[in-house]
Amino acid sequence: MSTVAPAVHAEPDASERLEAFLERVQRRAWTMARLATGSEDEALDLVQDAMTSFVRHYADKPAAERGPLFYRTLNNRIVDWQRMRSRRSRWNLPWRRHDDPGADGPDLVGRSTEPGPEARAGDEQFGDALERALARLPMRQRQVFLLRAWEGLDVASTARALGVSAGSVKTHYFRALAALREALEDHR
Amino acid sequence: MNSSDDRLTDRIVESLESRSRGMDAAMRERLDAARRRALEARRPAPGRRWIPALAVAATAAAVALAILVGDVDRPAPAPMSTDLDLLTRDDYELFVDEPGFYAWLAEEPDLSSTDQPGGEETS
Figure 1 (cartoon, one colour):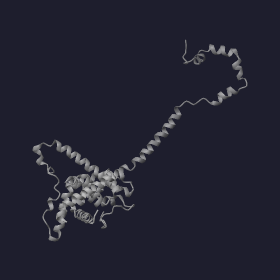
Figure 2: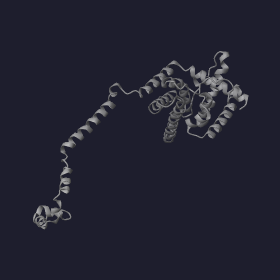
Figure 3: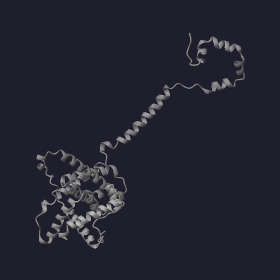
Figure 4: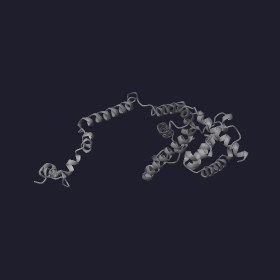
């Protein structure tokens, strides 16, 4: 992993209040859901559902277990959403598909394609390319990469969050990093 | 993982964090509202706070009432001392050895019928 101090805190303080925990993870959770759904509103609904379910079922769990449990809850919501969407798209008639705003895949970066000031142009372009690359990753690879690299969960916690083995986490992370490396080659 | 991958990972995290923090204010407010609604699910509504206590009290009252009513309706058991007194009486053997007792017992329809298996009365 990175030798630079991470910008996130993987291990919350044991006394961290539930509300503080949710406040800390909500932005990242929403970004993960948005990358999976391609929709800000759908992402918000999924995060809301995940937070409500988490509070109902796991509010009294120790602080150290909250991260994996919350992301597991969110991941289940995302998987359910994708299954529902898959079933729905199966019944979509061919001549109606062009009406579906999400039919061509997530449009995550269309709103910020204009380059800003020169100092920020590189970062903007990198960010846009990154979102496109993340959106193209298979869901499991994307979730593993975001939980490991961004949320800072260790291999075991990531495995618990996604309901997979530790070996699977390592494999998905390796493949995700390779795909991102290739996709972002021109922006490094 | 080599240092090149480390640098790439750092830049990715930096970019994600930067964009996430730069989320527009409206969406941030909606997320905050979603969090508050989720936390409401943990707190029972004001009117519902007494429901568990009332349920316990009602259950306890029902159990107490059932015990009291059950005691009133239940027939009092025959005092054990009566049988013990009979068995320990000095003249108890007289009943056993007295042939007239069995003759009397056979003539008593109510008593003799209950001695038969099944206890059914015969006319």
